[in-house]
Image (tube, rainbow, N blue to C red; front, side, top):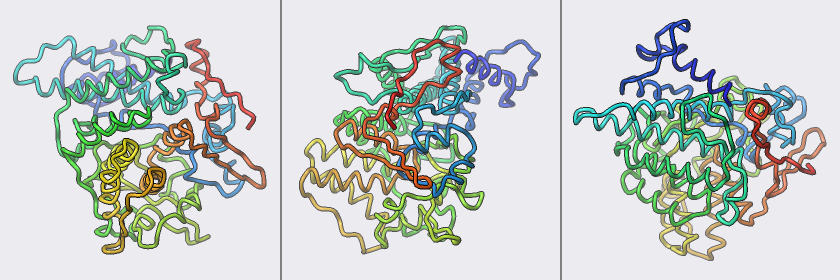
Length: 464
């Protein structure tokens, strides 16, 4: 990690062109930002800050690849091996984006937070000071949470203190040694950062600056984090906070379903914009013509013909008549892995039903779905058994949030709760299986990180 953080630090201070301190040539002495506008420009670096991982989505059950030839043509070993859940995921490959990008984001956040400690704001700058501090805290918590969904086990309060978590970096000093905290400490740091962010960030309705988090984005992130931990009261509380302030939804009947990008970037639902590091991978890049990843057949078949998501989120390939992911909330053909209100409605509905508030939970689900179907065709869900209502909500969650970087989190948390979902792949007659709660649900620490930092590896022992 020292190597990647040092490289990132040099890139930050010497390689970018966002502001006076970033304009200096590489041979200049390493410069440290000192002004609020410098810190803001550092966090406004969309290509670094607003990036999430790709390997969980590739490993999930939303996609399939038709044959071994197509699979073998994927860009990198990590993409190929993530698809078949190979124990040796990286084959010695270093500089893994799913690891590098979040820790680079954490470095940027730490530079900002340390710099802010040296500034005494005055009345005229207090609001910007607080907003930038909240932004940095959100960035650090968001990055650490994304890392935890890939490189750490599922959280359970009962055993979290006895499981390995992640290296927690709270300083910009690249020479500080890396050490893995336990899982409890990792999640407490995530929560501490994002909870603090909600105190500093102002409320703002979504505008053109979706790369910047505001209070409702931080509240929505907390709702997601608590859901992943199985803490439904807390998840519900923050979902309601966010939706009480801003609950708008897109009416899919107003969209052009024939367009390859029917949902605009500045739509009413997005609270925080983020892209996967695989945006240009052949696996997902629709703009290249024929993506290698096809939509899971069972997932696509689960949409009713009057469900507009079937045409808004997918298109049919003329060559073979098979569905592929079309586009989502980016306004382009790139996938979206940020935070939006539709996720909040589903999280709120699930948390309500799990807490025994059945009517309110189903009402929340129906409110979302009424905006997704052709007018006057949706038959609302009704209160039935708790088991059936949870099944309905989880089914709609998968249909609403494909290719959003959330399915891997859901598979992990729900299998840990006893759902026992098994995933299978077939390539030219060879079958690959990912059993529920397999150690392969925790990705390995990249080999270059293990070599440099000497931290403990993850156990990937499997019979797969």
